[in-house]
Length: 180
Image (cartoon, rainbow, N blue to C red; front, side, top):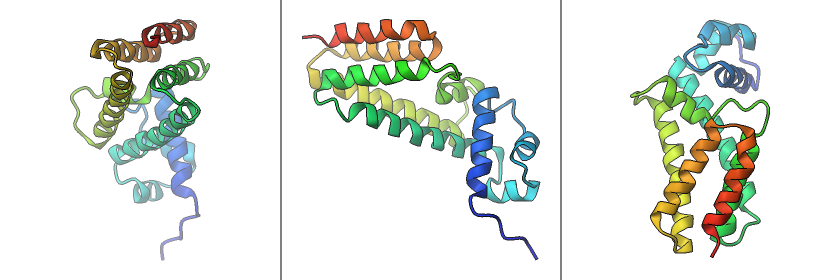
């Protein structure tokens, strides 16, 4: 008779895999490594995540939920589009200033698996598309030209790949771009 899984097992496996994927990359982490780190059996892992792609998709969905919460909290107090753009870039600047920051999970996945069209790639592409649309909408609400949205998007991309020392410069530049 199969054992009844302990409540929270799926979440524990996902948290373990997420940490490994973020620190080492999805390609570099094998399912055996996840099993060892999570302290679970192979059957249990595969019951919750039938494939590595399923586990990677769950990881990126978890990151998406965390990013959406963090961005939502940063934007909540900002009332006008200019303040919201500054808040958005400031939130990213704060994120990349964390010593544990190892890049944007979505961009990292797409770099590891270029040209893929699996579920994890779709999650990553959708997040990036939605975030870009958010920038576009805020810039349009300001009545600024579309090239300013391009500039801000490039700043956000640069923050993800740059250093923490550049973060205040990016925020200052966005403040200049959105000034009346």
